[in-house]
Amino acid sequence: MQNNSETGCCSRFNPEPWDGKEHHWQNRKFVKGHVCSFFHIPLNFGKVIVKLMKQVTDAKAEEKEMMCISDEKSLFGSDLYISVSKDVPNAVNFEISGTFLSKAFEGPFSDIGKWIAEMNKFVTSRGKETKRLLFWYTTCPKCAKYYGKNYIVIFAEV
Image (cartoon, rainbow, N blue to C red; front, top):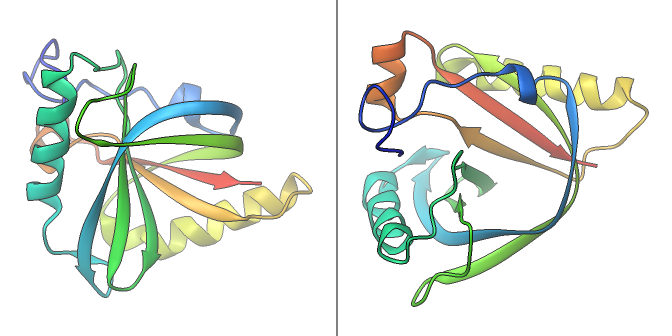
């Protein structure tokens, strides 16, 4: 997503600032899109991300470390949020506020069930309760293959 990386796309991800941390977001800015899914398998993810990224780029609203966060609301759709530095004209602008615990995971997407269970255990160990989970896909599949690592950060709103 960022052109200053060695791939010309996604930057190499450092999980350390995100693993086992607490974050307080106050009106953090995003643009929002909706992805159609079939049992959590995205059907139009590429089309949605390309449209959102064009809006962000045209508005010069890129962040240094851009996030692509998914809120898996149902088996048949998810909301996709791209972090931005300012409101984007002609886009669905959205703000997220709250306290979040985060953990970084690495491996194939098929491990997501195991990671969710581990995330919920982590939240409980902190004496908190999960309100919802958000998933940050830190690199596109092409860059994950190039870097040899497929990191996902799970945010638990507490």
